[in-house]
Image (cartoon, rainbow, N blue to C red; front, side, top):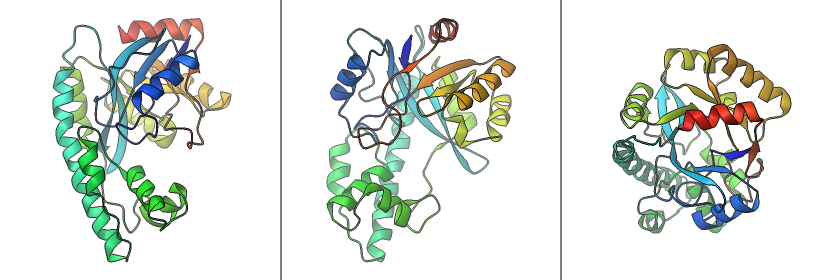
Length: 265
């Protein structure tokens, strides 16, 4: 089956409107779909023609002074509203972070007005990619990549530590909401990934079949999932046509598909 349980729209840091993303997923033959915008479920209930669509979000967490992303999916019979309500506070912190980053740019002689972006954002999350695009529009950089490499990179002169839920709290809220939880893009954590998964057993899945992984990377993470008795999830982490990553849709064999469908409920 073809899944995509990790992608982003204009409700967070993607460039496709939700409806366009849904149409692309349908055209790509995605059979099970979840829009996982950062810390919001604003448009996640959209239907993809011919597919099962699941409400979901990618939750930003902190653990040991590092950022960790956990994909959370609504299960039948759960109370997903518990998670939705908690994430509203996280989005407010993201808005404040945007204003601080704009002030830091101004100190360097780069004036970017973020207020129209914030006003238009409403219930969606805002982040560094949004600021990078405004910098391109203002012609202070030539590309989003340049904005990050010169100004917005992690720990750089403009970056402000993102407000995120402590991982234990995020997992507690996810559990209370009855959500299915998967560790996103484990390559970002390397050898720390199994430590996280053994420390937080309520996360009982891992994104082994990430869109840009080659077969060797998939085998590595699938092996870890099997050793720890975790479900393997699959997603592209699509952010839009300008993204250099994989297109929407990741194929799983029958056994992995059946296990994933059972886990999703």
